[in-house]
Length: 172
View 1 (cartoon, rainbow, N blue to C red):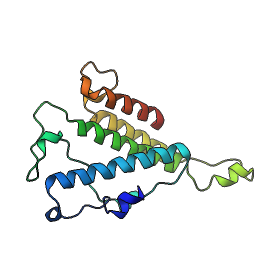
View 2 (cartoon, rainbow, N blue to C red; view 1 turned 90 degrees about the vertical axis):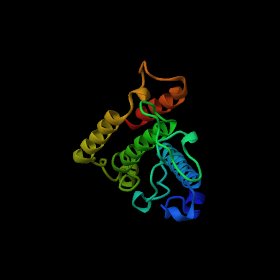
View 3 (cartoon, one colour; view 1 turned 135 degrees about the horizontal axis):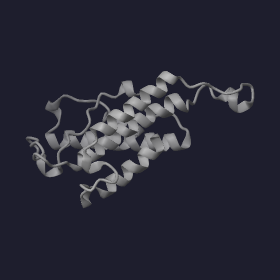
């Protein structure tokens, strides 16, 4: 994660500097590093590598690789779902997971309860409700082809649905 930040991959740099392929690769690398860092940090109880307010990089465009050339990005064919849509859905779910870790399992303020000097810590009902709403909106925006148990799931998306299912379990 730190290498991607040092390279400036977390920043949206004006289009004039990179062609379409380079821009999309920068986005994909950054968001993959961010997901890995967020997931591992949540599991091990480590702080996030970069604050969300310091990221202005856009999510990758939801088109398949063959739709991207140096000069342009062609829209995805109507009625089809790109593999990047699955990757972006996973990233959005991990954003909710990061929020859950921040507000439900905070790193600060728990020390007293661990050392026995306090009876515990409280979790804001408003934050719990906000996370539930975020999760519901995410689920509603998820393409049917990516929903676990969907009969529409194509072979290409089986690994993504497994990853999404696992992340849903960790987020819930």
